[in-house]
Image (cartoon, rainbow, N blue to C red; front, top):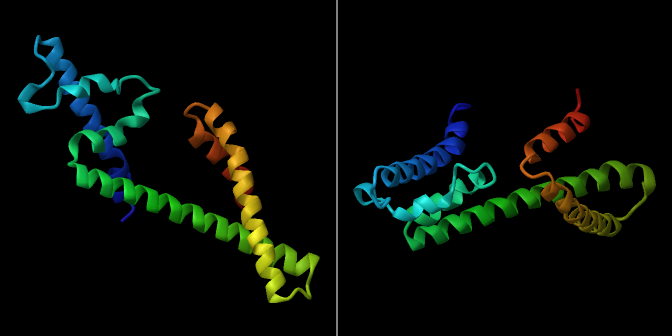
Length: 157
């Protein structure tokens, strides 16, 4: 069960890189990049550039899937992102409202007051996340290291 997720994350990128390399090799051999009916536009993806390597999965979807499947994949990715964001905002709101506000700030708070506290906490968490975006964008591909560094400081030992 633990072996399947890495394959699901790695194989689409490997497949995109193979298609790119096939196209490059065909052009290098004097062809037009459309060896065995392959789309010659793969040569333009520049997946050998480290700054473009993260585009492998979207390129694979856009170039190899029919239009209906592209829409379905985009919808699935948007839904997964919304679900993840929703659960993170809900967790942050619950932790602050129940463990900080209700316990230390206002132990006698009504349910209505706790709901408003949760909503305000969610809004503040969203604002914090948006303020964090320029910092993440400036890191140029080191996001994984940033998350690991932050997790090592926040997670219990």
